[in-house]
Length: 326
Image 1 (spheres, rainbow, N blue to C red):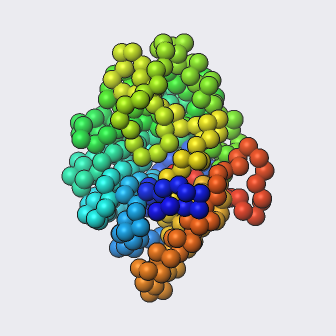
Image 2 (cartoon, rainbow, N blue to C red):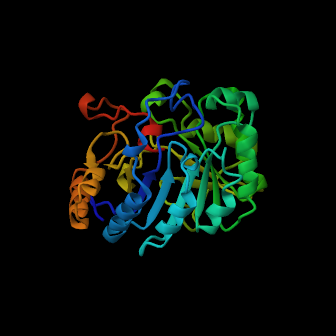
């Protein structure tokens, strides 16, 4: 698929639920957010159908997200069916790792290609402060279990908040010891993320180089589906990566669209623009009608975000990341 700016769109991020077992301070309040009735969330056959139609249009990579996707029953079944769709080359999943240990084997056997595990601190008190729950032990057990399946690529996602107790170099250390790519993601001013300054790539690079030595730009085979750029560090098994949507705006290379758990197709994270695919599916619409709606949405995909400027209020997304799909 080619959008209105000439970008090739081949990557679909699907949120499978708005539920989550953490309360990360940059994502949702302690009391949670208003959850939709489960009947409003796309069912497995609906997700598979939309993905098949997307594949016929050129999507070849799918990322499953939440909320926390592993709180939704039947994820291995969904992954297996997505992998069977002609044209789908990779199915990956982003999780906080809390429920991963007991599901990792089934996910791998279903054909999962890659796993991103969110981890913002190895300091137990700091982890609890950020995540709102004391599940660091469970997350680390999930990471250890994932390392037993080298056929599934493993990445750690960390959102630096500018807290000294996050001990970011300790998280980076995982890439030294294991075949794990550690990625630092700049805070996105979406939902509750607007309340945090975070740390930008230049500040992080200085911190990491003081601790580990020179970060050398990685120019080998592409790692992953998205905009992360990676560095090699002497003595490291894995790579260090940065997803820097604010300081290194990458909208010109954007290759993704998002499907919320309620079936709304979003073409840009910042804006509300998109199409309601659930309505088409549940009203008996044809595959061709679905394709036309997807094409219409792509024809309106914004050229880029305007996080550093003031976008029109009525066009700006007001939902938090757990409701959109992380």
